[in-house]
Image (cartoon, rainbow, N blue to C red; front, side, top):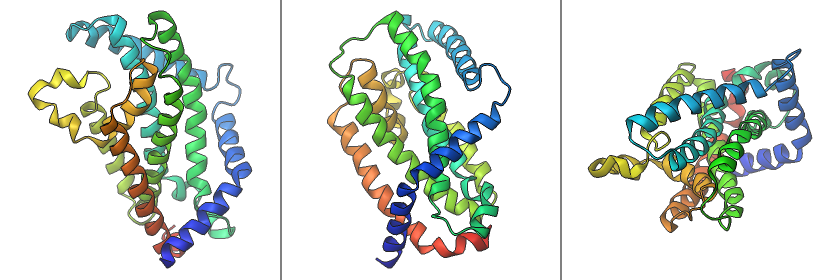
Length: 262
């Protein structure tokens, strides 16, 4: 209970310092794209080219109807990129901010929120692709669109607690960021982003046992005009509650050791 109390106090202090981590995230993006005319839109162009190429090749190979395949692919890739980059960059959140953590007394979680905010801004740029594709191919039903925001919030909450866990262990074990990056690359191929879950037929259990598939569906299906199933909500919300309790307990337990690990 003491560990949870320490982590909860850090979480509250980090949320109150939203001006700091949002400013740090924004400055980092501006520095990364200084003197660039298009800035983060270069990532959007790159993402658009990848979606177009994969859509044409895999759509043809899998015999998919482009009217349904491209919207599924674009919404899946944009939301996956948001979640995967928060988790993989979360590995280095404490490591990259080592000089601040060692010299200045600040809440620990602001550095994870900084990574989350930075990637959310890039997600907003990439979301232009989703709007463009949905504008061309249309949506089955507009009634489900409000659920997208709720699904996106749940996806972000899960990405942040996972970043908290891998960020903490990466500070202690420096080989972990490479392992997490490789793991997320593998999960990209077994998560239904480039293919529909139903295409696996008798091997559909690969998707059923994949927790990332539920998070992607929670944000993707409302954009496609579909209602997420009750099971999708139950798994995603269960992961949110259990994951945050676990991540806070872990952060509280090792809160004081982070500066020494760095």
